[in-house]
Length: 139
Image 1 (spheres, rainbow, N blue to C red):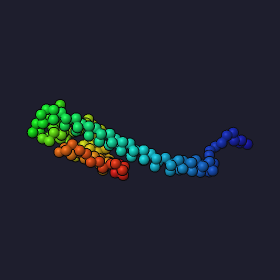
Image 2: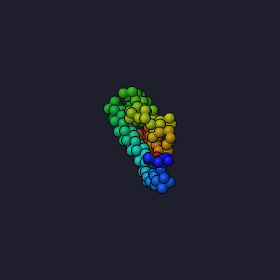
Image 3: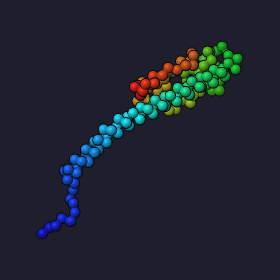
Image 4: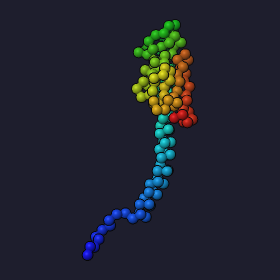
């Protein structure tokens, strides 16, 4: 006679309960995770916009202190245009954004290659930016 000394497996009721719990947790956790990722991308772009704005102001002030040269020039390793603001390539150096952003298109700073619509556009003629991420839908 063979006597069972322990449980050989899980019952169907136990497996069903575990699947229901995991399904419920994933239904709640996945949307929150996606929102958290979107919020992180928006925060990254807010930081980039602030860095671009400050760098444009600082280098414009340097340009004015240098006597407002009428031609394009280079100041502290940053390419400047004739209006006294960093060029599209120069703002990346001035703001320190050339490493962790998608900057393949001149004047456009995107959060990454997977989210090209989550971006800001730099206007080197005036040193201003236009954001395309403020509501978070593009990110």
